[in-house]
Image: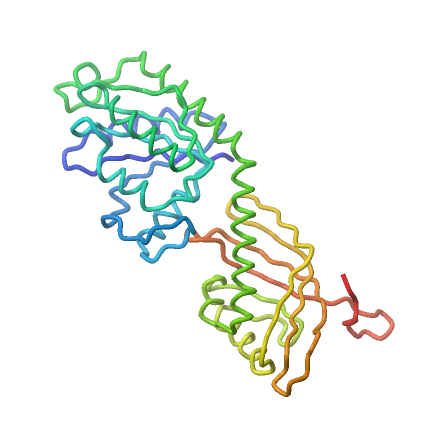
Length: 325
């Protein structure tokens, strides 16, 4: 189901945004066309932007990785924002700047409040959304302090605001759903890039680079005993064993097909480890049937399961290792 994050963009003491965000969440919860989650930036205390520039989706700070996982898990957003000094709250802008690819090809709508309903904050947020490849929908909910808040502190929205909110939610859900095919394309490109990372790490015999590609709880079925390698340490130990045989290692991946659904993806194709052995002999290796299962960990796709297999001869019970794809 389409998942929409309702992002509360103020962490200021004495804020009224929590009342507005709860109102949005309660109204949205009556719908059956999407799931809605309230995301409070107070729960994600990010430093002032300290990540290096780039759009890789890989982040150094664990706080950024946690925030990236939240953004990545959503298909669209409702940004609940006040207006501070004719502009966007710094904490919201900082949260949006911290990650990039996780926002891409999603939709966003705006519920704003302030002296003039927060309208000027929204105008600036639309520019930010454009840079982040977020489709901002036209309908919005504007809540002036003078008319929608008692004594500027207690949220008392008029019933007419419900129609505006429903229209906003209609558009956010529709656009988030319509953009899903593009998000699958982005995910496939990211997964193929991760498999390129595997190949580069194998050629460099770089175990630490390989560690970043596998989930800590990865389960691997390889062509050699034991039946399974459980955990990243076991997986890396197996690769380290391979490296002891080769002076130079190569890896080929052919006919790769990837299917993505939400935070999980499956890929299958044909793989072959080859190279030059320690004694100088060139080993062509054998083609195996390769299967990969990926999970989106927030800071990138990681392999949670892989399997290499060879056909076997029914009569002899032995594997057939000389086939070509």
